[in-house]
Length: 100
Length: 300
Picture 1: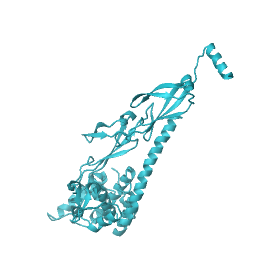
Picture 2: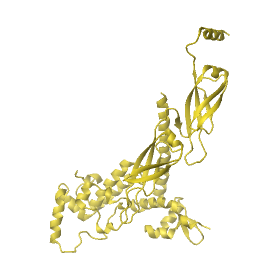
Picture 3: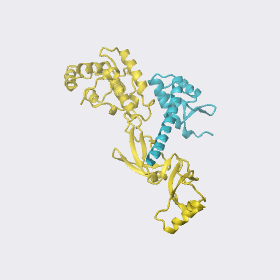
Picture 4: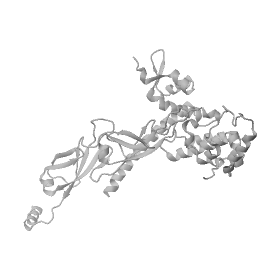
């Protein structure tokens, strides 16, 4: 049994954001958005709506195709990891600086 | 109020065509869009300028007004009033529902410059005014001590005269940013409010150094305990711990106390380690008898 309180139908998403269902389908194929199905209806977890809105902006406003969105998403993740590493290294440097 | 050269912002000549404006805007927007530059305030500001330039230059009416009065924008309002009085009542100033490419959905008119407001008022033609605009995102910094960051605790702080209570999870890192959804500026036309981003600045502790989830501490050890072994009381952030000291402990030796370090962020009950560096203190002000004993030791 699906907990529908935490899900939104992909149909409702399409109507609200004025987007085609095929766009959500493509994002799902690229592993960018999770789609849950109960056999009849397709749902998107509420927790993914922020990401979905971002992908909508990238596609419909910046004209970036799904392949580009996929590449950007990977690069942004990489960038986030690197920023975390920089932050860790900065803190480590501070540690040695303060000992010196 | 400073004059803003919208053509310069988009890198265009004054005679640029609508297509050139669109292309220049898209190119720059892809470079500075907030979705592609997370937590980058400089890019965010640049994007707002680009957005504002496009809002004016992509709208023929606004562009005309800007071209005519740009340098003397103070006179634009007087000009508009005179022009309006000549027009029939009820006539619309701007074409409603016109195609106007832009990224306005992310920004309220509050993100536009004073210059823009002085020339174009609210900033949006009737066609766009029905669109929902997300409120402005706010950025704030919160100072914490290392000991504050050790425990999950509540904090109250003011943003735009509103008290916001947040829970700071134990183990938050220096420079880490958390997002409070919906605590930014109010949205326009039923749009959602912006978000509040809080970056934590954790001050250095005079005793404990933190590296990830591990804590480092230097503890002085008298020569006799270092040589013969014994016990030593150690301060941790969790209270005092009695530690066994091995005989013949060398200066600079590190001892690891598992689970006595910093709490791991959002993993309740999980802690890093505490690494103790022993600093062997050589006794001073020795008596003649003690010196003789050391001499005897050195010759044995």
